[in-house]
Image (cartoon, rainbow, N blue to C red; front, side, top):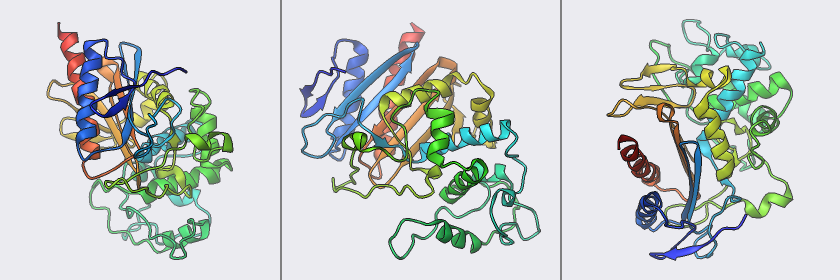
Length: 352
């Protein structure tokens, strides 16, 4: 795919700057890059069934290389929405039950994985982030990738408080555990399940946990606020955040989520906690309404050196994905502001 590269305000980009929309994108992108002197990012959105793709900055500090449609980013916790889709397939196929005790899907005995009153931890609690699991486990002190034995040992040490109310408490451990359960049920790796149920049907050819040598050059390095290279996310227990993807692949995924034509996707969009008027949650999707009552679905992801942001407006058939290989405390808000500027421009057009 040929891509023109332009230099504007010291930033590489492929924005042709031919339309008013191009200009709005450009101004928002430059504002984001100027804040904390960031590295680069890829932005895509679907509006009126048309796909728009823009790339800004560099793949690495000082590289002089613009990100492209083949650049592969870590997507962090957006991975959890994929895990939710896989669970929906498992429920549809009768292999999982949302109200089941999760110990039904685990090897061995876990007497500690229940609440003090004896109530079981149900699968839906874990998916909804209300199970009261810890956010993360302590890394293996040897520095080695987390093994199954180490993970299960940590799980045996979990102590749960009484489930007095459904209080939202974010947990990477919970989704790592769900991925592990799916692997046990299907006798397939998480990566293989993603390929079978999501990536191949949606033609997401570069969305994976692990990549062959041919794709290695396209794997971006991640950077922190000081532009220092960060370590890559571990591929061990990947269901909480270890998927990587490209901008075109994620636009395919967004379109699938936005159209919500089948029961599998609709399942993940159902509210599991909260109130839509005050802010609710589906399966890894934050769900709410804007000031103008537009219904939205939002999710994001952050790893050691990557930040991603996704927003879907189903009523307007409009969706955004932004992928960045640099993270800092303000990156998430900055990526949202990029999409908000474009959303406001598109809504102005619709009101005319």
